[in-house]
Length: 453
Length: 104
Image: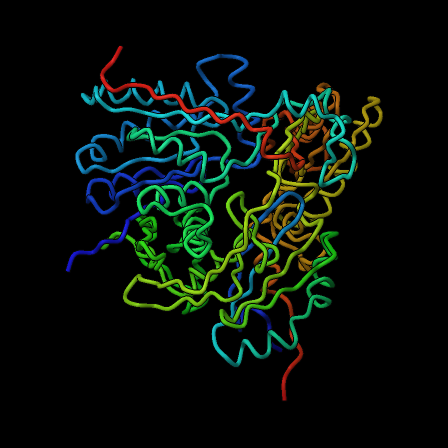
């Protein structure tokens, strides 16, 4: 019997994800589409700054390496690629992809760039928009705004796929929409076919973090139920989806990791608030009726996803510069290690005050004691501890002083302070969100390559 | 003494300054105990140690899972947090340390 289901593989689940699992799926011819999800909340703003420095930059820094690794097998086996690796510059990303393809002896490959998520100018013209987090008008952030990007939906990706290009590159698109669009394109599902849109959306949500569905972020050596085999070679998930929306999840045979009810349940609720109302640009997904059933080894069937219509407005992430974070670390061990680390922390803070520096927020961590779970960590004293001080402020010199003064603990602090870190300063790129009307979006699709100059 | 770690596994996700932690029971008995005893109040009491809250709980009986939405858990949000773990990935492990009352 021929399996008529569409096979969609997760190529990557974050900007710096491993490359080998995607290559393995393409080489095995195990998928029809590979979808690479590579944009975190603040990533677009970082790439906007990169584009300001170089008009040909501003897309995912690993794009060339990913394309070099995956395009030969993808071309051989007819695998189409969809990705938000375009980040702040989908056009340059498409050009770079075509250039890599030409170097690989694939001069006919076409890459489509989908644009329209950048609404920076439109938001600048609407200072009255209200920030969802602070409740203030966006006007307060405009002087420091770096970028404003709307979460586009499956319709934007669909426009790229309809050009026939083998590779479709976007900027900000809602993660599940990247996966839903190929199914809509393949089966001709309408945007109002909500049962199908629900199935495609839950598929995308489950696949968007790649290995987090197949044994990544799961192993706990102390629990028999939480063992993960072959962690050095965890295979990424593959969705098998039918025209009617029937959905099964699996992964490439022979790869490491595991895919079962437990890994799928953790990922289904990942980054979800109200499970009855998971909002994407394509629908409002209700997960409360979902059943996950193991239908074989590394095989899970997903049923019961329901959806209401999409929200009227689109969410926009507004990224803005908020000064600097300076940081330094130094270590103590042996008798009284914690007391000496605390003394060092006091000395550093006193010296920063003496130099006249002030900070919007400062944090003192005792790594090994309280750095991750704070006061919940209990009172037992470790043999060794690492002091970390971090502070955020508007003044770069004040930020740099934090690491400088921690470093000085080597010779000018309590006894036995070692392993001071190199002082670090980084730009803070904060984000808040606003909702905007859909008619603010000017969707664009441009195709590159195909053998033309 | 029973800890959540004895009954369930967990995963933490981030959105802005809010962490969500899903707690999944290993079996039906564990699910009943978690559903009864791992209340939003109990979770809030533990997460107050990192200055987080309020906490909202959602039940998913078909999946034997509870989803906790914990506001103000991420030091102001991933991009501006001073925390060594700005995504709060380690907070799933804090959830698993919570003690539950013994059942008779």
